[in-house]
Image (tube, rainbow, N blue to C red; front, side):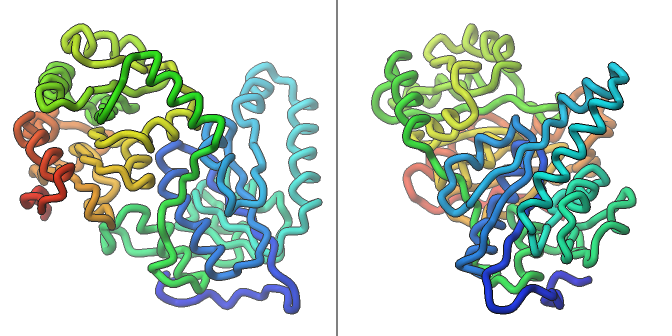
Length: 368
């Protein structure tokens, strides 16, 4: 069904609906899907809204007062049981999740991931209304309705999730990325920043992501860090436990930078980023968090372009539409990564400083 059409849902009359969102992973996708929380809350103010997610991304949702509950899918444990051929125990785990979900008596389940694994989870909940977003891999056969927003028609961040909200009867303006900062993570983040000697305004550098063609170059991060330091902004490298070695290399090239990679849990990272004066990052969940938290953000995209419009004047995208881009998972440049190489340090720095100063940014998108 076209996303512009409101779905003919058969929900119970006389009481608020009980709704489950299924978006299991990944961190960046959960951030972009978080706008569904506000869409659903605006559409059904008194609804009970739960979210099924894998444990690694659950901290992004744990402190949100607009969510009534979080269900965790222990996928890593299930995969271990499958590898070890403990099939009886695995079946018991799956049945336990089924019982847990069905006990909630959901009226509506939204598969916001559209894959077979998420579709099966939606089906396990047993709701009388299941809506899938771009459902494929066979999951479309487990849905009562399927929302298929046209690809590329809407360049705004989280556009497909926005379309899902509209299909459910929410206004487009109800969709806003929704990350909440918990009190304890805020205290911990502030303590870590203070222990590291970060005082005054600081800029979060988020260089790390899953694929090399999405990376910017380490020497350029170091050069950018030095430029920020000269302007009185402390550069702080932010990343997860898997980014520690790469962060050390950048810090060695930029001794003025503070390296916090691996020192903060996910919800503590959210809290820390909310305190930053500015964020610069590649196509990674932390960059999307900056936009969600309304922190001035510069996003560096090349082989991917999950969005070109951040839907806020406080965040901008730098992206050059080369003939080969976006190549996504199939780079053709023999490792040169020309799309990211075209993003020179002066251009990134100038865009960031204009954004930080509140001045209009220069045109920065060259799109087909």
